Image 1 (cartoon, rainbow, N blue to C red):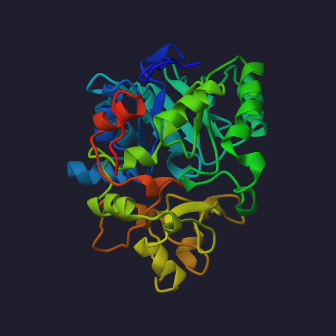
Image 2 (image 1 turned 90 degrees about the horizontal axis):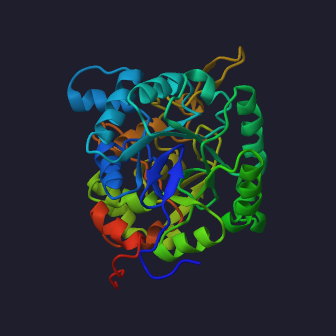
Length: 372
C-alpha cells in the first residue's frame, strides 16, 4: 500500500531510474517536442517527443532542411540537453520514416524508444540499442506475447511495455465494437499483461489511457502496474507545443464533445478519438474538404505490397487528412489547412493551462488540486 501523499516508488527501466513513475505520452504531430519532454524530465519523469512529421517541424523551426534521421537526432538531443530523462515515440504506422527515426534517436542517446500503432516486431533488429530502452505499446497480452516471441529470436526482450487501454487519445488499438467492452477496461487488461511480462523476464508494465489524477496513479500502482503514461494532461501545459487554439479547445471541451471517429476517420483505419468541433473533422463530416493529402506520412500497402497508398489522398468520403490536420494543430501552415484536435477521453476535466511543474506537483500529490 502507498501511504501519505507524494509517496511514489521510483521506476527503473534498463538501468534508467525515474524519480517518479510517470511517462509523458508522445503526442503527435508536434505537441510533444523538446520543450515539453525536457520539462517533464526535469521534474523526475520521462519526457517523450513524438517522431511524427519531425522532419517538417524541425526544418521549419531551423529554417533549413532536415531529413528524418537528422530531425530525430536533433529533437532527442535537445530534449536531453537540460539533464532530465527523455525518449521518443515512433509509430509503426509511419512506415516511410520508421527506421530512420529509430536510428537518429539511438545515435542521439535517447533514454527510451516507445513504439506502437502496430506491432514493432523488428525494432531490436534495426540497430543495436545500447543503453536505450526499447518499449512496445500493446493493447492485449496476446500482442505482447507475439512481440516477446519475435524479439527472443533477435536475442532481445522488451525493457518495459506500455499497455494502452481504449480511453486514450489518438489512434486506438481496438475495433469500434471493442472499445466499450468490460473485458477491455484497462483494469481488466492489466493482470494478463502483467503475467505475460513476468513470463518473459518480469519487465515493467506501464499503463496508459484515461489516467488523470494522483488517485488514478496510486490505484493502478496498487493493482500491480509499475508506472503510468499520460498524454492529454501534458497537452494542456505551457510547455506543450500545441497551438493556443488547440489548448483552448481542450479547456472548452465538454464530455459530449469528445468522440471516437470512425467514418469519416483516420486513413490508418483505426478508431481515432477527437474533439468533434475540430475544424477538419467538421469539414470531413460535411464532405466540404477536397482531398489534399500531400504529406504521405501514413501509408498503406498497394496491390504490389508497397507502402504508397493513402485513402485520404483520393477521397474524403470516409477519411480525413490526419497529416495535414495534425500539422496545422502544431502551427504548421494553419492558414492553409484546418486543424484536427485529438484528446483522451477525460480531456473535458481540464479547465486551465498550467506549467509542467505545477502539473507534476499535482500528479505526485505534492499539492492539493484547486477547486473549480
